[in-house]
Image 1 (cartoon, one colour):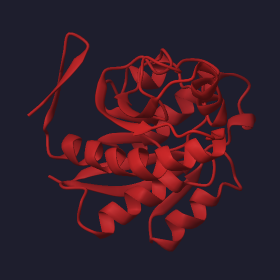
Image 2 (tube, rainbow, N blue to C red):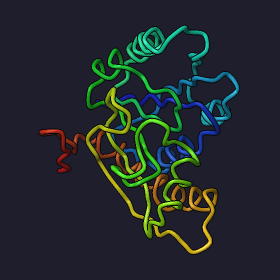
Image 3 (spheres, rainbow, N blue to C red):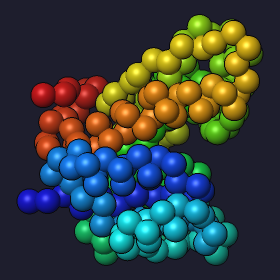
Image 4 (cartoon, rainbow, N blue to C red):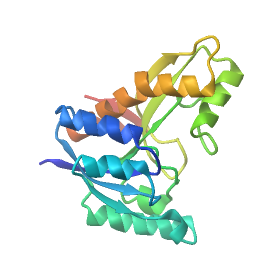
Amino acid sequence: MMKKIVVLVSGGGTNLQALINAQQAGELGNGKITCVISSKADAYALTRAAEAGIKTRTLIRKDYSDIASYSIAMRDALTQEGADLVVYAGFMTILDENVCDAFKNKMINVHPALIPSFCGKGFYGLYVHQAALEKGVKVSGATVHFVTAECDAGPIILQKAVEVMEGDTPELLQKRIMEQAEWKILPQAVKLFCDDKITVKDGKTIIK
């Protein structure tokens, strides 16, 4: 059975593009992106999806008074789409247990650091890379993990380290981590999931 992948986006959609490219190259295994849902109406990711012939939907965060009501609406949308796997690709809203429990170990996110470093609430976008540079780390990287109601705390699936260079700015480091890590390990993790190669035991993943 082909697994239906629903991708959640909020912005430009570079990670979505990496997934679309992988799909077009036949690298998502038993999975297919069937829908892209955006929390913002003007997200460029919606254009990327449409150009690839993928169904799009918007579920605008600011139309909902709180996270709970938005999470319930998202859960219902994901259920309607028959999502087997939900991928956060630059999706900027932390959803609560209404979604996370309904899709337990079926939602994955890519985070631009080596968890548990530089993660959790407030660590997103350039803030992550700024913090890494302020700390003076010699390597950073990216982590693909399962999503739980606690931010960046779910079981880790894949990680890839990227060297920090002398003179790096947050923008330079962000670009290198995207190109060398995020765009590689996110499609790999999706393929592993869709090919039934991941099991979760005691909060850790085992990859067959």
